[in-house]
Length: 88
Image 1 (cartoon, rainbow, N blue to C red):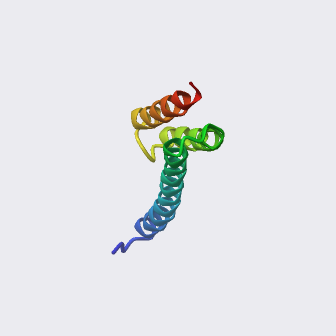
Image 2: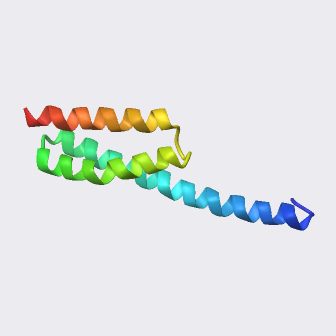
């Protein structure tokens, strides 16, 4: 455990950031799952709506360093491809 005031503060900040990042990552995973369920159910309207809410959060997680930027881009690309495949 930290003994100096600055180290104690850094630990408090770490805990807050960790909780915030965990919430964002969990929410992102839930939205991805929602898109994938709609795609597997062959429901284009629901899938495109879920994709519309998932993409901004995935991009935000990538830009903030919660997940790597390339992983965020890969998620968006694969989900978009899956939803667009339902259209045809």
